[in-house]
Length: 207
Picture (cartoon, one colour):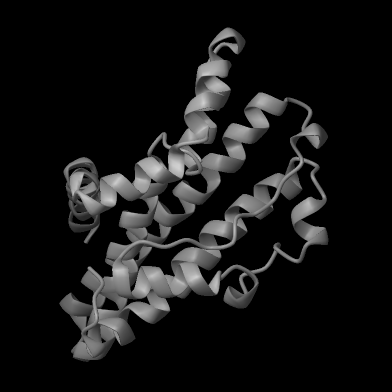
């Protein structure tokens, strides 16, 4: 999806800014609504991409296909129900990316069917659609420090959390190994294709 092709990089820039900004904003918004003032106090309750972009993670994503934004810091002790609160915050980012993917594909099909759409606009919207799906699927994986791992942690019984914390130390190393060996593609692409099928089917049914 990404690469060193100049046009691909230019097309992907708006998509990366949008996907990262909305993803992190969703985390911050839900945490704020649940009573945690931390994201607001740190200036994360905004869609400004410069508040969310990690430069090194951004460049890696752009040229290597793997990267990250600045994680939103939360203090779950403010939540009335800590377990449910942490799950809601973790799920929020993934849900936001899926919503963006659906909306962008809807707009893409709508414009393609009823208007003459410029190739540049088509590619930018398509990248918004595809990158948001990839980001949603990637983040739902139950590997630390991804959102899926936070969901998994809060679903585990307390007597099983020790094993998770031991696993957490090696999460980033596991991710790197999966990426280098291309094993991550074997996990991601079936899920990506499944979500694409659902989104495209719903949009074409509507339109």
